[in-house]
Length: 341
Ligand code: TRP
Image (cartoon, rainbow, N blue to C red):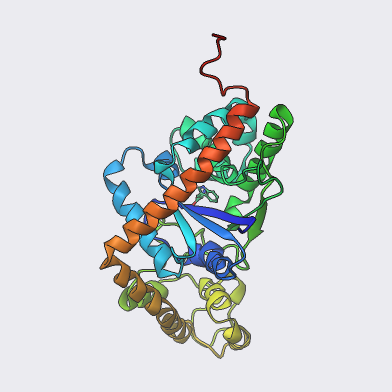
């Protein structure tokens, strides 16, 4: 039995984009294929509710989009467990216990939460508290007895690092309050932790600046043409500044072998933005074609997808039962027939 586990997840608020791929998914597939870990990938539909609680009609479609994207990029249900968060009720229970000793201040100081709150009109309890639920997502898989010493790696993009820090604190706090129960998880950050959106802002599903993994060649060409480039480079032979250019950042991810050439020619004024964008569009199309084809294959085979989610979620619940037993016993709440007969 493998003693090392991988756990990561994505909020199911819509189809996944290139930022997800280079920040997380690519790494997940590699770790899965190393055959060293038992891997769990969470379809975080409860966490999606923190921002979409008033749009539940969209939720099932969004969950399906993410599940298809998982399969499309090469996550393999034969090797990895796909876990549907809402169908593991133990996660809600564990979140509740953790919330007792989590300070509001620590949540309000979380840089990712701070950043995300800027876009919201109200401060919702569930939203500010989602790092607590994320700690439960992660720590549920670090069962100690009878497997003390088990390692848990959490491969994520840069924006998730504060949540991982807070998860580690939660584990330490629980252990010091109630005795050694959880293993402290390790964070693993991808090689390209943050790929900018077409406008150089953070790539986001709702920000209208994303290239989705399911985008077809025409929309890819259109989107790339509209991308932000160096505003000082007006004519093709003006010298450019690749650092502030979204297209150049995409080369780093998609075709690092061309980077040097693009950089030198752009700076020297030998490469116009239109030509550059055309070349990048074709690279991107070649890259996304097989992913889109695999996605279509699974779209036509819903049984495979259902089965993958069912099987993965069942495995998660097996582990959840073991973890919750340890948690309740550590917290002294494992009684029902407490009165002596
Ligand atoms: N916060 C992640 C996102 O925004 C989703 C997530 C939920 C997650 N639970 C997790 C990531 C556990 C890593 C580990 O997509």
